[in-house]
Length: 341
Image (cartoon, rainbow, N blue to C red):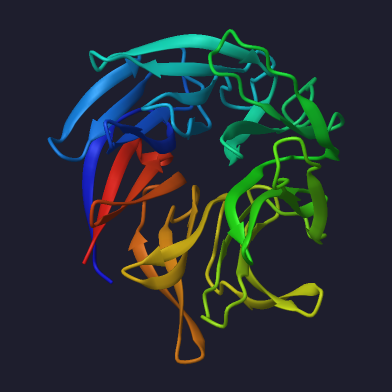
């Protein structure tokens, strides 16, 4: 695979990347972890629009399904772990193409979140890194996972219930399908947990432990094509190991470990590009690389995509016959598209 890099925006400590759908067309979003802005990029006409200029501290962004461009985003989560006043805002896409940014939820240390649709209703699931801090290295008050039905507007009632607590360094969050079931994966020092939404809006959510290794990030894909999904983990929190786990009976067993050096691992993504399953993995210190992992001829193979960038997150857009990787290259202060051929 050949990757070509396109810089779509310069942004100090670019951290969060995502997309939203307006008028049936996908628009890319990128935002800073530091004090600063959030921007919308149109891949069709290659224009950039400012959504907000401050305050910043954006670690997560999620489109609201069926809302024609509206999305939620974390604000006021600043480095390093200055997030006692973090919030989730509601960005409303106006008909004139601008956005109205409105307060939605005060949630200290809100780090990752996603939106799940159940029976035409949207549910928000939020993971807090911790619950309070007295110092940067204080992890004595663990984080939680909370869930609630999303209202139709930011001034509507949101009632949250705690699904999990006691999660130290509650960092990793993956949302998708694991072995045919809608799943959210949560990573912390206590391991990797699968959260399974109910089939009905008033049903019970289920939680199941999958791994007990301290884990910072996780992703899923059936990389060897045998019909059973594998897990890519970065271990531990901001860790220095990348491993692939395969299900052996009722347990997951490590079958591969990245042989190179990783420093402050932060990117894990799984899916298909050009029809072939692969993982993407990246880290923010040392050589600051982004690389792919594939399974070919009975072996795991890696290919370097870029170095010296220090990605914090990636978002893969597969829309209108285009496949691109949007990367928040935090340490190089850029939002970047990697096109594939």
